Image 1: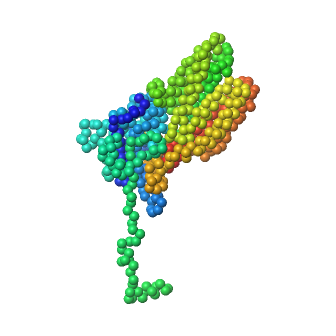
Image 2 (image 1 turned 180 degrees about the vertical axis):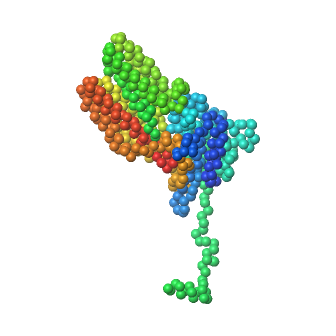
Image 3 (image 1 turned 90 degrees about the horizontal axis):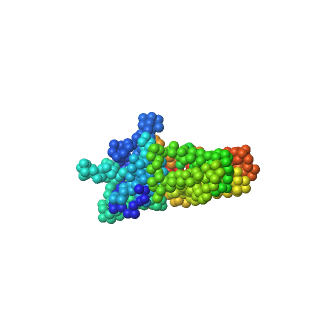
Length: 245
Length: 288
Ligand code: SF4
Ligand code: SF4
């Protein structure tokens, strides 16, 4: 059913820390690894060893250079995946009911058995979170690893999205953003977490934490008094001589 | 956006077909006997042919019937219903015109459903906030006028067709202008897309992948935009200006010629409609 639930019991989602992300792409590979053999159609690659390789990924890591008004520019690595929006436009446009948002936890999913592969949902998503699986002709997107987080066959520590579990710097956090006391909600409150493209009116659940203020190297070096050496004696005479030439 | 041939053929042909069927249903074009058979047949062929072409871009067309289920929220689903309902309701009128009996009311209803179908098609695009150029009422207006003009030329309606041509021409010129302002007006930039605007001005440092992907092929179509201005002129000339005088002396020859000219313009306009449209996801890639 493509009508969005008025409210969801939980708002499961990710909080991504742009301060700690080092841009290693481990989450990209972990995501592809898990989702290639788990839920639904595989994430195929086209022409993987040829001249124009292309493939389906549910998570991509961009890198941006941010130039502040003063001082040097800063590199920010920026993972981009489905934000499990509250007002998900990708769901309401779907003609078949294949796309839906779960009432119990807010996860946005695609029922691949009903998807006709029209691509309209990918057009409706501002964040480029949906990619067509061209071999199977169905739409793929982040499932928030719905087949891990509730999976009692996995050790408890692994019941998290593959990207979160794998991130070597702990830049990705998973939890209920609908509960103001959850770890992720507190993180968002403390660090000033923000939404992407709020003007698109999608009300994303996922939040991003801004890079922390960088320490600025002091204008004058700590070694300054030692560096300002006045040469004396023979060296001083040489110094004066050389300056005159 | 990628100008997929199947979608261009679909919107142009079914737009023309439903426009023509609506005029036949209203009795503005009112053939009798065998001419009725052929003209209604042409309307049906265009409308149904266009709809069939649209299934060519589906990944799983065998499940197309499921597209009737979500009419509460989805314009594509609504379009499925209105198009089938229009084609069914108009069938008795077509038979009536051919075999010479009168069917009250159904023609009116069928025409209204045809108009709704055209509106639903236009809303597939106009509903998308992610494509600012489309997210505007000039899109339903242009789609509606294209159908009306095409139908009126095909029906040989003389002055009425001429007025439609004029209206279409004006709407196109104005629509191109209005469309150019849309992306800036939507307010999405790389700063809002990344949220990094608060610490400085962001630019792409490195792409997330070195090859292409579905997003870039589908949403970021830059090829051909450089000829946009010329193509706009061609679209207005062929779709509206050149056929206009021909409509005043309707004969099979002039109608045929006017329709050909108009369709050429319609195909150029529709190609541009996709090729020129920029999706906000391009911002993440530093492209539009
Ligand atoms: S990020 Fe895109 S795919 Fe995910 S819920 Fe929002 S609109 Fe839908
Ligand atoms: S591609 Fe599939 S999930 Fe997306 S709108 Fe079409 S039918 Fe729905």
